Amino acid sequence: GQIAGTFAMGVAIKKAKQSGLSMVGCYNMYHVGRLADYVAMASREGLVAVAFCNGGGPNVAPYGGRERVIGTNPIACSVPSSFGRSIQIDFASAASAEGKLKVARNKGERVREGILVDKHGNPSTDPNDFYDGGSILPIGEHKGSALGLMMEVLGGIFTGGRCSVFEDYVEGNGILFFVMRPDLFRERADFDKDIELLYTAVTGSKKAAGFEKLLFPGEPEVEHRGKSLQEGINLDDKTWDTVSGIGDSLNVSFKAASINR
Ligand SMILES: NC(=O)c1ccc[n+]([C@@H]2O[C@H](COP(=O)([O-])OP(=O)(O)OC[C@H]3O[C@@H](n4cnc5c(N)ncnc54)[C@H](O)[C@@H]3O)[C@@H](O)[C@H]2O)c1
Image (cartoon, helix red, strand yellow):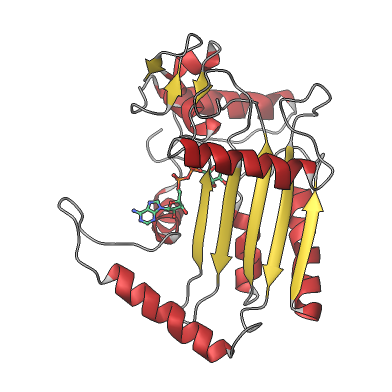
């Protein structure tokens, strides 16, 4: 998925530079992973990009349901700025990405309320209940359910891919990339100026109780990446054993570099 996704975004970037606007779809590509990585490729080239993605699962119950019907189906968008970092949104239309449940399960932790129901439809905070036939809930009730459903249509059906609830579904994502030059409607300098104005208005606005600072989407990930590059990435033992076990089975040995080991 990551190889096909990178290739597809490369094509979209090239076409958008030529004609101002491009659309590229891709399916039957297995797992693309983190959707922001692809839209960020476009912003590094000074372009705006949107990505719609379906697939995985089904593992999410639609609003009002208790049965897995859709995927966690993320959406991502990245906008270049003149102040050094792109503005990026990237999130699942479900209350949790499935991978985060796996991490919680491996660590023996509970998840917060409102993320999942068990196989009988009862609210649960135990990630094991998901792996026992429960469902993840959509974000924002009916709104996230609607968004997730549209990802099935745009990332899946529209591109020629399949929805995970279909009998002939082959595991993997379907993606639709839109890439645009930011100066399609106005001068690039005016676009940049207004992005900065918006950034200042949002991050400089009054904070709610309990918040130290206001961030723009994408900033938490930049901060986290900086920390991880300094300190390494913390993995729980179960995840590490799984990953290194796969390496061993393929004769690729790697040692834990974590300072905590
Ligand atoms: N390929 C797949 O099938 C698939 C499926 C689901 C999710 N995913 C990936 O899983 C990852 C995690 O998704 P998620 O739903 O858990 O996202 P998340 O909840 O971690 O983050 C959501 C967004 O909110 C922003 N954000 C977070 N804290 C913020 C703050 N304090 N102020 C302002 N903005 C803030 C982030 O910058 C991000 O854009 C994503 O990268 C997604 O692409 C992939």
